[in-house]
Length: 205
Image 1 (cartoon, helix red, strand yellow):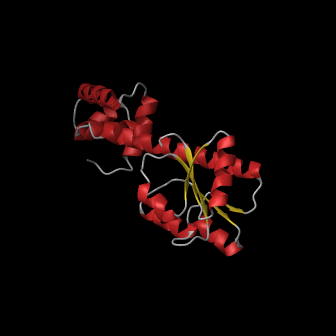
Image 2 (cartoon, rainbow, N blue to C red):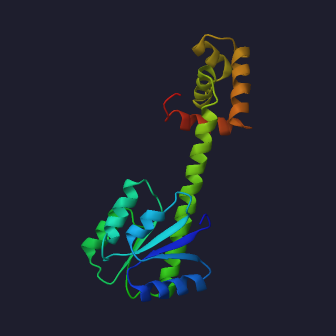
C-alpha cells in the first residue's frame, strides 16, 4: 500500500462500508479495519496516506490509537471521526497530533476535503524525510576537512579567509571545495550554503 490510502478504523461495519464506498467513489484508495489493534498489527512504515479513526471503540480508543502511533514514530496524519465529540476531547485529539476532528454525521464534501488535505500533509512529510535522509547520506561521505570547508563556505567566507582559518593554502581550499561539491552533488554555491546550514545543526560523523 505504497500508494496514498485512507485507512479507516471503526468498529461499526455499516459505518466502515459507507465510508469505504464514499471514499472509493471519490477516487481515493481505502482500506478498512474493525479496531485499532488490527491496524497496528499489520501497519508497515512504507504505507502512505492518512488514518480516519472512530473515537470510541471496544479495545483501544481513537485517542489511544493516536498515542500508540506516536510512540512508534508513525507520522501518518490522523483524522478523528466521532458521534460523541466535545471540546475537551477535540482539544486532546488535536494536541496529540490529529490534523482534524469531525463529528458524525459529517458532510461528504467536507470529509473528502479533509482527507485530501491529510494526504497532502503526509506527502509533504514524506518528501521532507526523504530529502533529510538523502542529505545525511551525502554528508557522511565528507572527510573532516571537507566538512570544515563546507561549513565555512556556508558562513560566507572567501577562499583566502577559509585558508587562513584552517591554516592551509587557498589552492588547497579549492581542492577540498571541488571534492566536497562533487560528493554532495552540488552545482551551485547556493546549494552549498543550504546544505552547510543544515550540517551545522548535525553532529559531525
